[in-house]
Image 1 (cartoon, rainbow, N blue to C red):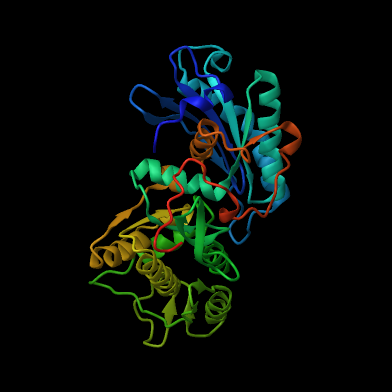
Image 2 (image 1 turned 180 degrees about the horizontal axis):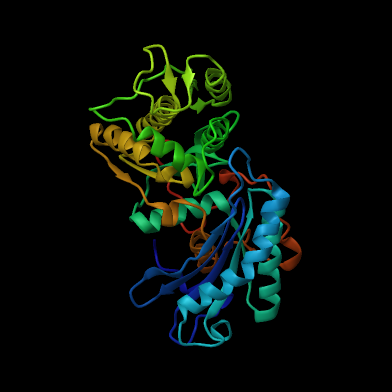
Length: 389
């Protein structure tokens, strides 16, 4: 990323060392995270000083409801803020008085109750510490954190999480959506299937599906059960696929315990279905990502969002990108999964480049559950019009 233009310096207050430090608060779903991010003008680099988070884990077979998730965030956000400041500034008692330039928070999209709980914490701290507020689009935060963490300058972005599935590329001042789900998100599809077969929500249902699918090996290959493959132009659909695979678990051929070595040829297990589900939906995502690469003339792909941690998705995407002579930019759970540092990173760009839509007054901080990626003007990137504009 380019260093901030000097004529926007009046919008914020660097610390005594000339560094700009932002505290970011994320709470759009079942994870409450607080991150502290520092921009060093000497080296022109961004550094994550701390990034603790807490996850609300619901019982097996259940999803997380907005009310209970909001209670979880309200119970943990203050402790997370203290932990983040203590880790970032271990030898200081009140670092907020001398170091912080602003507080960034998730404006949307997300679940209403959890969003409002964390926004309330951000508003309170802004008033207490007399620092400006920065309202951040959750999707933009994932993208910018990924670009900084992987040094990807202008990739095609596959954004896959529990609430979003989008293929994105930058053009003319905005992140344009080239393909997306027309019903439920890929992470929601995985989570709901995990509930049907009784997999744990700890640490996440999608990860436990991945563990089941990893049982596939040359010595004991899993069965591939053919599932609906629904790609409509540049968009994908998962709801019918989910209904189909849920119905399979009600058939007599379904054996929940895969430890039975004597299962018949027509039978299939939980691991078989997890493997088949992953292979099918990830192939759909790879297809629309490759089509976007071809249309945009890009040779790199960045995967962001919680599902982006999945090693099988990364391997399938890496194979496709390598065939096209490109590079895959991927991250682990530290930055793929919702976290406070990504909110601080997007907030840092908005602050440094004077984004009018992100530098909000107190009365403009109402959260929204619907906030599309292409609604945000990306003022920190040049308005160059490419092939795909």
